[in-house]
Length: 68
Image 1 (cartoon, rainbow, N blue to C red):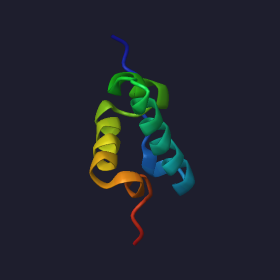
Image 2 (image 1 turned 135 degrees about the vertical axis):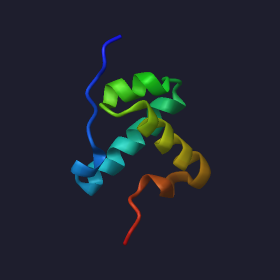
Image 3 (image 1 turned 180 degrees about the vertical axis):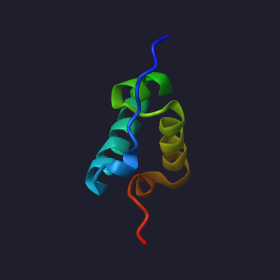
Image 4 (image 1 turned 30 degrees about the vertical axis):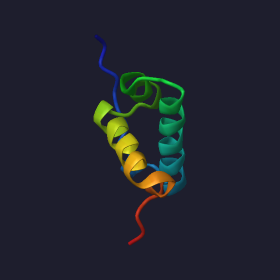
């Protein structure tokens, strides 16, 4: 299995982080696996899982960065 290099989302601008999270949720809703989403978006499996969990627990507001 080939390991894909992941990107640290903290290096992205706020709007780019939000768009990446929205893309993760869109792909998950149409049935993509965590692994496939991670590879496509250069994220870790854990990162994708965490985004999905935050969305499941808190809805759309969880896709935005916390202010503060």
